[in-house]
Length: 293
Image (tube, rainbow, N blue to C red):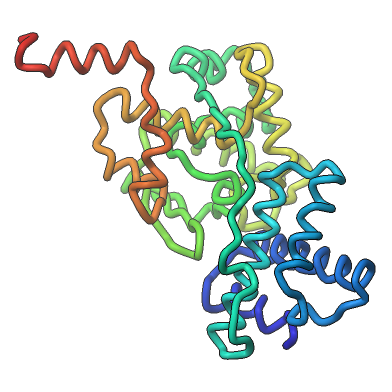
């Protein structure tokens, strides 16, 4: 069974992004190489759980974190489930496998004061890159979009008259997110600078050379403007997305509405952002409990 059939299935039927498909491809290729080098075994369908277990041990011994090992096993498990689905195998060797224990990472959002400080106009030059960088941070915070969603935004996705933006999310699902006036003002200002580049790219966000922005540049922008604002170790687009959701919920937003804004398929994913501070919980409790009114 060709692995390409599996990757086609992920891309066409499951609508996984190219990055996700590539991650699956890398994981399966690593396991395939291990089978050949250590067990003189090929193809993958000849592997049993003892082979997989020895691979897990080798990954851990080589310093790979339990979280990363689990991700690789998830890729392998998806492949075997696919083979079962098309009746190529009769049993999934990972059917009784239990994931390695991992420590739950607590990612703290930026506070409202940190976000306002980072977005202060005093931090940005009145230039193409300065306005672009402020617009990027503002858009992350006022819409809660993902990094890849921001990179993929086209100029035509902005509807200034309706004050909304169209976003292409996971599995090619489109959603509409409302925009506030300050974001629209930044859009207009950025477009004015962008037009001077005379670029024919459809992508909204460009480098100074007129090419679409890329992941490492986005991370550098976030780090640059938050290093002097926040002492938090992790500074990333996802932390701003976390901040967006947390601040909305802390200020009384409905969980279902936040779910739709974030582009989540279920409430379970959104509930990750409901870890309010004890102060916020106390305020709600004091205001809402009938014995305290």
